[in-house]
Structures are given as structure tokens and as C-alpha cells.
Image (cartoon, rainbow, N blue to C red):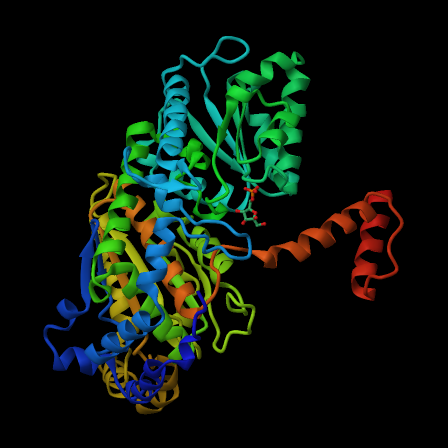
Length: 550
Ligand code: F6P
């Protein structure tokens, strides 16, 4: 269905006027004026609590943003996605990662197929396999149980499983160590292989297309390494399994058909951890915990489908993002998980949001009238505080922050968790309050500084404040809460894509580099160097060729 750019809507005009007023606000004043502000701008669903009160918003802002979502057809597009409409128009595909976490028996047909039955058949296959590996019933070529699981994949076939395995490490199987190999850079695999015993190692070759250059190269290297030590090719089936949509390519690679875990073209790579791509997660945490991960995501799906837009977590998170990006022109968003086990969450969100919405044309191919996805970046707190938070507090650019933490730790070391939470809450308060000249001078006076010293230091001691953030609280980082958290950001990304008018489910922007790399790869390997290269690229190729020849 043709979609109007959000900038052409009447609500956008009203939001522009409203923004002109909002620029004058200080959040600190808004808090002082309204003791119920935190209550008014917070929401809880699927075990996630979101406090979005530390944003440059008032009730009118939220009402206008929700009106914008309505005008842009967010609810209709959401329903179309859940119903299996081919909303990925440039690839003519449905977008049904939500079907991967629907309970058994949930009715959904796509092109005449009962996809709920398909999904649960693969889950059963994964369950059988992961139970065998975890109990030790699955024996390697020398009769031993597996000790190491190596997931070879990249992008969505790596980031989601790697993030979830780290996030849920307290639930990990004590005998099994998970490894993730993604980069074409052999330094990674070369460092890992000597630490592995091939007779107790299981490789999962995870690739939706089974054509991705990095994955195929790493898979071949792993296969060669294995066969060098166990030359009988019949042993491969005890140590290599595949997850893919491409059965012929999996068979051509030499993986036994019974060792293939399928999924479908209606699962986007960056939305695939719920599918068989999550096999490494299930192996680590077991079927029951994996089922809880799915159930947590499903609970959030239900909330997204059923809650009114003004009380809808992903919708509000998306709208706050639109307000910051398109009205305040904030060009990046920092993700600050105050939980070491979420250390890969910012990298995971980078692919989710930037590969989905890092685009400049609308669904119909016309240029976007306004910029879309901000740059997503970040790292765990409190580490970030001792690195780049300086810029967040005093840099020229305003960078909104999403703080994410769990109220209960997964450890029992005394004192640590209170310190962690104190830092998390203090950062959002400091970003919002800032420090003015009066406060800074008074502090320096109290420390006994002279008037000239105070005058010289004062500009350096000021914090502009009024810097926006969201805080997301989980009770614990359990499988169910992690599932809900991931689904929250998936749907946030979707809602923003709808408002920006873009197809969030293709990724044509990754293709050009892949094609050029193929050509340059051949040239570095000895083929004649094209004279079509620019002088920079030509020079780099020449230097690399000279270095390898030495
Ligand atoms: O190159 C980008 C991309 O296609 C991602 O969208 C995807 O997650 C990743 O590569 C890996 O793709 P595959 O699972 O097909 O190997």
C-alpha cells in the first residue's frame, strides 16, 4: 500500500511547532513542576519496565507522536506483518519472525502451508539433537561426548546467537563451551583451532544463504582441519551440522541431510535467532530455557499487537527515537547495558537497527524527506563511563542513551550490584540535570579555590544537562526477559521503519562491497589487476601483492 511520507502529514507540522517550544524546556524544570512525571512517562509490559521520563517531552509531545504513528498506519502495517503479508517488497517476502515464537497450535498459513507446524517440527528436531549433545548421548568419532560448540556464521547468523549465549551464560551447560567464528580474518579461527580437540568439537555452519563468503571460507578451513586429524569423511557427520534455507548448498558442502536444520525465506537474517539459527543457544542453555526465550518474545509480540499505541512499549520507544532523530536532529543513539552479560547487545542492535533502517529511499524508491536510522553504538556500563561518557556529558553533540539493567544480579558477590545500579541511575540523572555555573562555583569555593582559579576552571566544570535517556529495567536477565527485550527492539525498529516509510527487511547496501571484494580477491590471488580501479585502490592492491610475493 502506498505510504505518505511522515513529513507530509498534518501532525508533522504540529510536531514542528511543538518542537520549537520544546527546545526552550529544561527537563529539570519539567520534573520540578510535575511530581508524577516519572509515573506518567513509564510503562511496564512482558516483564520490562521502561522509564522514558528523562526525555524532552510532555503529554502533548506523546499525544502528537502517537497521532503521527496513527497517521502513518503503524497498526495496519503491524497487523499486515503478523498476518504474513509480503511487506518485504523488494524481495517479495513475508516477514514472520514472530511466527517462530508463537506457541504450538497457533494458526498461521502462508501460501497454503501451516507454518506453525513447520516451525515446531524444526524445534522438535533441535530439541532431540540438543538433548543428545547435552546428555552426552551424541558421541564423536572416537566415542566421546562433545565439549566445544563452534558456531561459524556472520551477521544475523552470528550476532544474535553470540549475544544470547553471553547474556544467558549462567544457564550454560557445564561441559559445553560455545565459540563464535565470524570474521574472514583467519586470526580468529587460527587462535581457536589449536585449543580444540576435533574428536569432541561440534561445528555448526550457520548461514541462511549458505553462500556468504566469510562463512564458507571458515567452514572449509574447519573441515580441512578436522579431516587432517580424522581423515575418514564418514566422521564428519558426527562433527558438522548446518543451519540454512539452502538445502542443495548444504548437501554440496558434504553435510549429511539429517544434520541440516532448516528455516525459511520469511525469516530475515537479523531476525533469525529464534529459528534454527538459535541452535547454538539451545545447545548451551537447553530446550526448556530456549522455550522460555521464545515465550518472552511472544509475550512482547502480544503486547505489541494488543496494547493501545499510547501504552505500547515498542511504539513509545520508537516514537521517542523519532522525536530525538527527526525533530532534535540527534544523529546517534548510545546503548548502555549495565550488565556485563549484555556486552554484545549494542553490536546486536547495530545490525538490527542499522541494517534494517539505514536507508535513504522509501518503499516506492523515492528519496526520504528526512533522515532515518541514527548511528547505534555503545558498550557496557560502567566501562563506558571511563571512556566516552565524557563526550556524552560535555561534547557538542547531544547523544540520547538507552540504559538497560537488571535489578537482581546472577552472582552473589557482595556490594557489586548496588554499585552497578547506583552508577546506572546516576548517569541518567547527571545527563538530565547537568551542572550550572552557580553550582560549579559554589563547589569550588567550598574546596577552598581562589577566585582566579575558579574563574579559570569554571568553563571546564559546566555540564549542559538536558540530555535525554531511557531506562529499561528487567527483574533478572532470564531467558524470558531477554526474549522480551530483543523483541522490544525488533518491534521498535519496525515501527520506526513504518514511520520513515522504508522497507526494514532488505539490505541491498551490503552488496556493492561484496562484489568488489570478489574481484579484488581474485586480483590479490594473482589475476591481472583491472585498470578500472582508482589510483588509491590500485596502489593498495599493488602494495599487498608485493608484500605477499616477498
Ligand atoms: O551481508 C549481510 C547479510 O546478508 C546479513 O543480512 C546476514 O545476516 C548476513 O549477511 C549473513 O548471511 P547468511 O546467514 O546468509 O550467511
